[in-house]
Length: 154
Image 1 (tube, helix red, strand yellow):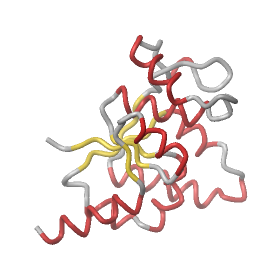
Image 2 (cartoon, rainbow, N blue to C red; image 1 turned 180 degrees about the horizontal axis):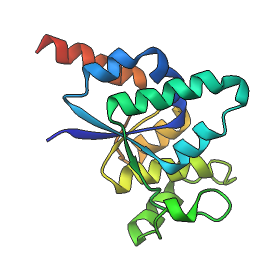
Image 3 (tube, helix red, strand yellow; image 1 turned 135 degrees about the horizontal axis):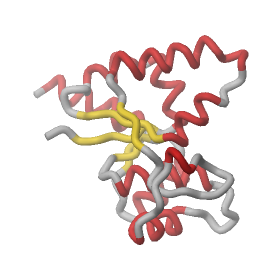
Image 4 (tube, rainbow, N blue to C red; image 1 turned 90 degrees about the vertical axis):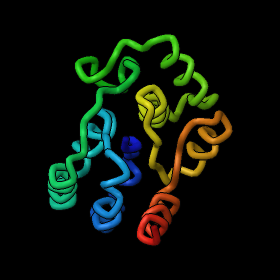
């Protein structure tokens, strides 16, 4: 059975330039994006329209799957693309939210990864460290890319 990876929004720019890495690991991983990541992609400035189009085409080519957000936070994500949070989702979300509550979208994305049994693929160092501290599954793009090199040696 393949491992599941939820792609964080900060990986989107990498995705356009490193498609071959993702394709190389598609036999090992299934890739997902949640509605908060899609929303951030849609909110890219019009000056980056071509980048947005390339990303959407990459999603389609790679068979990236959509998953609804694991929590609904008023004013931060869409009710029609979110779930009413379970006790577990609420606990995970609150553990990931920082004291100033400025990382709401990061916490939504990370909670979705945890609740849905995905590894979060992120290059957000603070979020990655917090997830590791809480023993949630997370990896940076560099770790992901190194996995590809290991897979080639097998």
